[in-house]
Image (cartoon, rainbow, N blue to C red; front, side, top):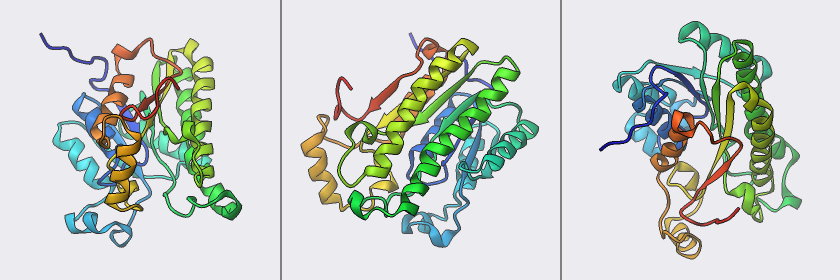
Amino acid sequence: MSYALTGLEGRVALVTGAGRMRSIGRAIAVELARAGCDVVITGTGRPPERMPADEQAAGWRDIDSVADEVRALGRRALPVVADVASEEGVEQLFDHIESALGPVEVLVNNAAANRGQDRVPVVELETATWDTVMAVNLRGTFLMSRAFARRCRAAERPGAVINVSSIGGKLSGATTAAYSASKAAVQSLTSSMAKELGPHGIRVNAICPGVVSTSRLDDWSGEAWDAYVRSNIPLQRTGEPAEVAAVAVFLASDQASFVNGQSWNVDGGQLTIR
């Protein structure tokens, strides 16, 4: 006897920040397509010279490559270069999607600021870096969610919002002040929106990944990550993007119809209870 998720066939899903080859966003876009969704993929439109060596070697084309994967699964795909921190840009994005594919019914807020200059002691953290992290991670999630919810409410249409947060928003580690604060705020925003939008049939949940094998791990050596994993993760391995994507697909499905306002850890047991 098999068990299949339902309620996703033919729905339009929007996944932000999904252009990287080794990324959670790409995996979510592909798995939503596999589950039956037509998928809008947004990204910053990185030129090849800004891509890591493995993407350049693979001839990776950012969101266009992900769109090709979606189409190969028999679903419609719409790659769009977008700035989630721009209020005007977000409104234009939703208008464009509705004209091209129809109304968005699943929103995945995955876009995140690049990891790097923000990973310093708070006394050395530049204001501009703080502002960039907050603009993408928090303001972008707010603007995208607000635009989505307004349209759902106006059409009296249910919907699902899935915010990709992080266990970093619960751990709040040293030298991660901007990132941790932004991800904790995303969890709080998730809770508030779930309470407000639930009566309108709009569910809002967050996923909090732990250490996942994406390009965001490239700033440490493999040996350093191995040592961290052995010391902190009960399953003794890093996660795979597809394992996070599987949770996102479930949260978008009918089978998660009574799940609302949660921030679920997908971290191999690094955090429990919280």
